[in-house]
Amino acid sequence: MPIVWISKETYEQRKEIRHSHKYGEWKSKVKERDFNKCRLCNKNNIEVHHIKSFKRYKRLRYKVSNGICLCQQCHKKIHKYQDFIKTL
Image 1 (cartoon, rainbow, N blue to C red):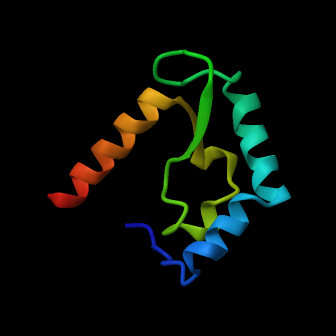
Image 2 (cartoon, helix red, strand yellow; image 1 turned 90 degrees about the horizontal axis):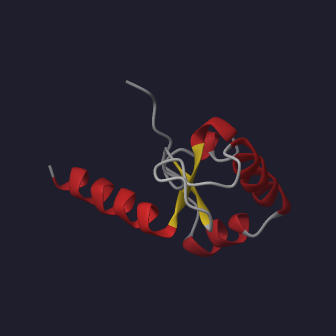
């Protein structure tokens, strides 16, 4: 079982990180790798999603392998599924 590092950063600190140059570079690399297409349905107009939680897995935030391109519809489905799993 992997070690989970719970971030002690505030919401505002995480928000600031998401607007940083380093974070922007990570998003660009994920988009380039995925050809700017949703990995689930192949649509354009994508968002970049952390496979392992941005908040919980601080060490994986900038790993391209921890990112995936999703369209807005698929991104919402993924979050609903993740929220459901947490209730089990």
